[in-house]
Length: 442
Image (tube, rainbow, N blue to C red):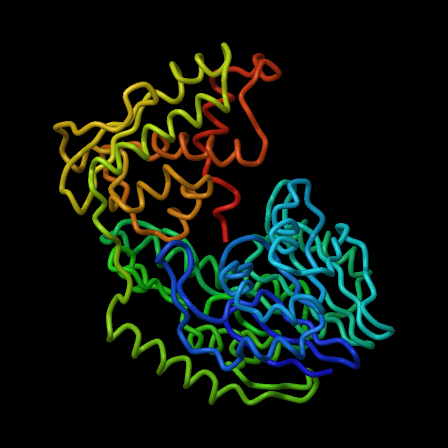
């Protein structure tokens, strides 16, 4: 077996006739001008000629990246096989078919699939209803567990995975090592420090339970690269910190791989060079400052996007329940547009209109281009929370904003407010639409 590092959450496993790549994001920014890679990829689009299988953990663009996939030469797309968890919406599968991938296997949750006589894969959603999934690979007698950025931190969840893996000892564990979403306003560094500490604790708990021979910290080789979210780099877990703490715990041998590195998965791997290169790359990125910025959208364009958003929600959701929902839950939200230095109120009936309101009293502060993105894309609200280019004013209520775009997202997943749920109480409705989207938890 050979493990070759690609970047971020992407690596290749090669054995016999199979060369599988996971979550290939190799260039560009993701989450709507939010994140960039710390280090450049060595892997190129021509290198896909050696790939036999691609496995995606979930739809987030740092794992399933449509722009990267469309750049894979068509002749390679026609020969390699896509592996993805079985879903009801089939959106990932449909997209892959549309751009020329002819061989697709939908993996049933918890069932092992053989790719060759010596290579098997299994995957499973991290939680019921979640879009994220973990995977495990059996290559000959070796077992590799890839938790990517699944939100898995309780012993019950560990035991569930252990059962699917038949309690076989884990040779290599791969897991995320830093926070990957909005964690507080610029002055709330303590929130980011707490999120970073929590992520380290999760890594240690995973090591304590699974007791892997090797651990590869990954899926965090990114930085917040926009002028609006750059401040969130102030408390991220850096790879040198994580390596030091894991070594102090002594629960597993740490392996850190830099783009292009290869390893047989058996012998001790020298991590110092890779850690040094990542550290230098990150320092250069931080010193350079933010490389991404939002555009200032003309107000007429923004107002039109708001009206179209209202029409879409009204058309998709109708009847007595939706009227009740408007009166009780979806009343309005207020947004302070940072590039206009002006407050606005949105309602489904009147759209977006300027108002006189202090920034600290608004429900959200964000750039006009991101508000337009939220109005136009069903996943815009989730992207906003992961991108982190917003603030929550102290006297506002972010849930007023969040509810509108959570409903938009649920509609895209074929959930509609209808008479079937008329018996839901007002309290229950508020709970569903004021809770942070599970999909945003990386």
